[in-house]
Length: 385
Image 1 (tube, one colour):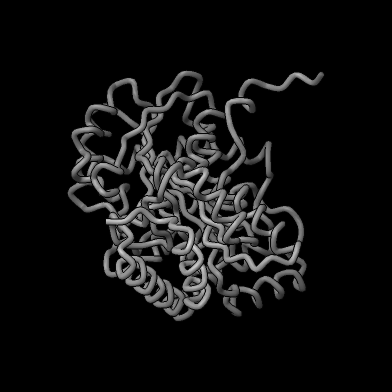
Image 2 (cartoon, one colour):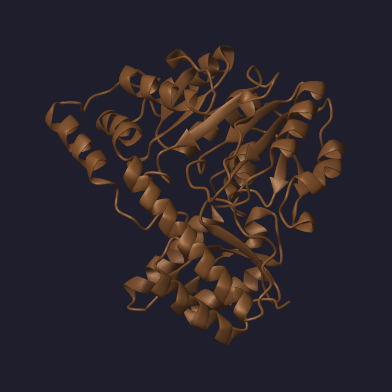
């Protein structure tokens, strides 16, 4: 019998991808499945990005690149970050095959066996797995009691963070809640990080997908530039999930160490995809704005229908394209019943550290959202006010 490394046995498969896989299997069997589980825009990649990728392949950009990425993309990323007040040199940026790879490299670079990692729950499913794969231990701050807002939970965060804390992960706008944390809350995070010498990941993958609120970047706050790693990517903002393109930016010493990991693992992001990334940053602002407007309209429609039906909506998302709602009964069983009996895919809140809740993705058409809700109402899926 094969013996497995302890680190791989510490983690479970991604719950979001597992639910999506079940949805695809049922669809292949002929079922009419409405997928509200997937964290993937339902829009096509904008044409200028596609055309840039094709042109790059035709121009022969199909070999390896430098591990950190092509200069033109790193320069474009540095320019983009500068618009948010983030002063990164291109040499402080690593282009990665997806934002998930960027996060993985940070965890592997910063976290050692026994190091403490603090998460804000509900938290994206892979943070926990990445911490465990790096040998870290977890402390979790429960934001469900504050309707997913960080500011009312600052006492709990203050208790969780200590001189033993190695890494804090902040994701705003948040997956799975869509919350944008206030400037005051982020200032409190800054104070704790500086006081206890904590490194912080600022996961900003949904930063362009916001509705009337602009999240601050942690690295712009006094004392945070030297202790913050900013992570972002192209999957959500530019509907490029399958292209696999992301990046991390941070202090030179951390970037130099993370670059070693990239050079010995994935080598580099795909060459022609990086050229497409330049077009994403320079040529598609209108397409992004149209997509964000559509998401906001869907959010409002989804919430209106839930509230009209008496379902409890703890908080209106400020960004991303997710809504966390409390469900009837055990969330794992409820979501399993929804996919098997109603053919609606949703993600159990337990996967994010929020039992009793489920995440609904509104990266789907209004008609399909309505169809999903009709089926879920019939199941008495939602907890009522």
